Amino acid sequence: MSSERPLLPETPALHEVRLAVRRWVAAHGRSVAVGLSGGADSSALTAAAVAEADSVRAVVVDHGLQPGSGDVAALAAEFARSAGCGSVQVVRVAVTGPGGLEAAARAARYRALGEARAGLPVLLGHTLDDQAETVLLGLGRGSGARSLRGMCEFDDPWGRPLLGVRREVTRRACAELGYAPYEDAHNSDRRFTRVRLREEVLPLLEEVLGGGVASALARTARQLREDEDALEELALQLLAEARAGTGLAVDALAGTPVAVRRRVLRRWLLDSGASAPTDRTLRAADELIGRWRGQGAVAVGGGPEPGVRLVVTRRRGRLIVEFVGRRQGADD
Image 1 (cartoon, one colour):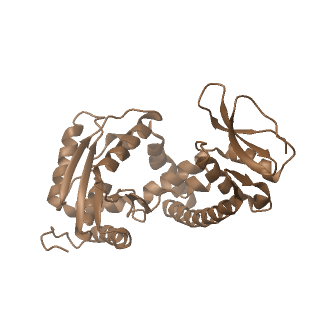
Image 2 (cartoon, rainbow, N blue to C red; image 1 turned 135 degrees about the horizontal axis):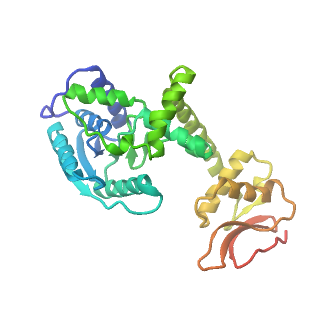
């Protein structure tokens, strides 16, 4: 590594953050971009990335949601330069769109980071605590293993080296750097579900269950992610075997474990133009295989015009997807 990089203090919290980043860059690439907000997590991440990666491009996203947001972005950019980032860019975004303020801000941030990353993987400051909150949100929504698996260490182009590091560690790391990170008022605004999970639900669970809950939730996410990856691999193999033109051969799917079969159906429906099939939709489509009794088509999406919808039907030993203008029966 270049001797021109600022030397970091040999202190416990910074060392823990650096080790996490060191493992990530060794596995996934030594030239990175970093999404920097000025908060403790992304600031500690940025300093560690400069120490461990070969080159670091800092991208500061200014959401413009609060008075003085431009000043906060400028201070974050100044920190990135002082930390030794090779390039620093501030991007101002407009937060609009569906799903509420949190979702709209997240979508705008990811778009901006994606456009500014210059082909590099983007490191994000999500910590073990963020992972625990994500698992709880998925659990409360009944989203299944796909959601409970939480965030990935690397989901190209998004990298999350700190998923094994507690939020309190990044705060201590900033203190060890002598840097006072920005405290976003939205992070303590209890109108937001994630804030209430952070400040009310997780502390209560820690008290009732005797501690270690956040780490246990993150560990559960990791185990589920490994299981989900294995099931997805089996589903891909089965999908290749079951394809019959644009449809699926029922005989190739009948008798297979339902957990794998529904993953086959989900991937096939997405490939066929359905948008994010729900658990209810997948179960209804699966009954065309596992509990066949001559039932009609299952709606899986909207059509190109009013009155038309996308449906999956069992016909002559195959599942097919087609647009129909009214409910059709099966002729199997």
